[in-house]
View 1 (cartoon, rainbow, N blue to C red):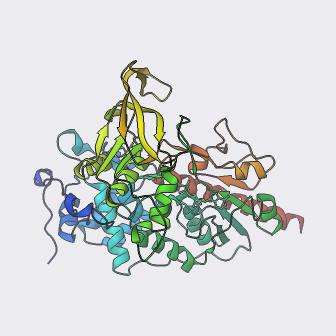
View 2: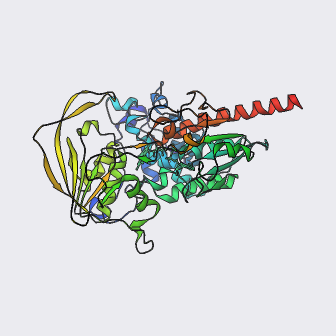
View 3: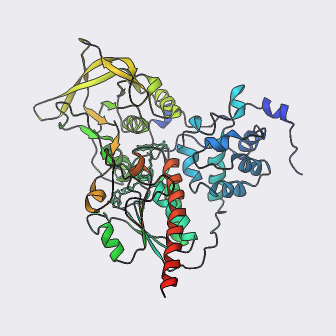
Length: 480
Ligand SMILES: Cc1cc2nc3c(=O)[nH]c(=O)nc-3n(C[C@H](O)[C@H](O)[C@H](O)COP(=O)(O)OP(=O)(O)OC[C@H]3O[C@@H](n4cnc5c(N)ncnc54)[C@H](O)[C@@H]3O)c2cc1C
């Protein structure tokens, strides 16, 4: 029997679904995913909360303009795989975005229900349909366009590179992804921990691309093994650079070279990519601190501090120089960190690290801060309070204060323009760089941003690269 449709008033009375998740006391002892995902009935009920408003502001709230009411309607019809396919029309990574996108600042914040009630849980629904499609083997391989004979090289296998690959392979081009690390997925595999994004989900996205015919060349550092110009000489007709922002920033204060001070990149890579948490199956060394200070207030800081707890810290601190309002981390991550017992030292900034005779960090001197006028980021500038210095005992420090772009490719590619931060500059409509046939997108262009923005840039670049290749074909046949 078909499900009965509720009228609008009744739909508005339905409370927003609560995501079932592991209890904090259990989850700080394991690396399993924290939220379990909605059940089918929860998803169906949540979907009915969408009142199908005329303007659908959620669509514009999404950086890649997913047809949100369209996919929710399919959930109400219980066509979950159809709903996943609807999302994939504009976002190829729904299982990932359903988990890590900041929906509370994007599609959900503009949901019309948010004015009086809680917004529709769009992210939960996105995750549900994508998981349903994958877990029930309903992922279909779309039909590919006829072979164009063109070869495309993609440098970097993060969300930007994977998106370009997915779009261009369907348009009939041959696609090869070059990746510096031994595993593909970019930050999705080396940065974001298993308890937030299980690696099997990233792997299934890469497997899907491989089934479509994308060739992966891992452990290949472009700029070292071959340069961008050498890729052209090898016969590639167009190149996409999606190398991310993987160069860690440091505080630049005394004692930063002591043993026991990691960049968040190194700490998370050891734990996630090299699976240090999975001892003795993997014997990657990692320092198991008892008093761990993580410096920063973004997602990377939250991922690092929650990793430290799971690796056995008695005290895991966030040390952040502004207040919670200015923290760039997702609200959900801050909430989960608090639930797990992370201690927040806000308006606090380290000024030096102190070591013992063995060169190991044992303490950190900090100064309290207050907020002044807004700075260029629009956030209130933290100002040190004179004489407020104090010392914290620490045996592990993780510096998570942001990343810059790796200079390798710009340095080895003549004529590739960058801005003052070393990010590659592009035409914002086409993602074309200053070099013909070379496109770029994701964090290497924007600096550290989000998965969905990287994927959106990949979509834009793929479209322009296809046009570029078609125009090349036109020029070739005209000269034949
Ligand atoms: C710890 C952490 C947590 C985050 N959490 C969130 C979150 O919750 N939500 C969210 O939306 N965003 C989050 N982000 C940001 C998000 O992950 C990035 O914005 C996104 O991954 C950028 O995608 P990308 O494709 O540009 O680059 P990346 O994902 O960085 O991938 C770039 C890839 O290029 C490879 N590469 C680099 N140089 C070369 C070279 N010379 N040759 C070959 N390969 C190369 C790298 O090894 C890497 O695999 C987080 C970031 C971090 C670090």
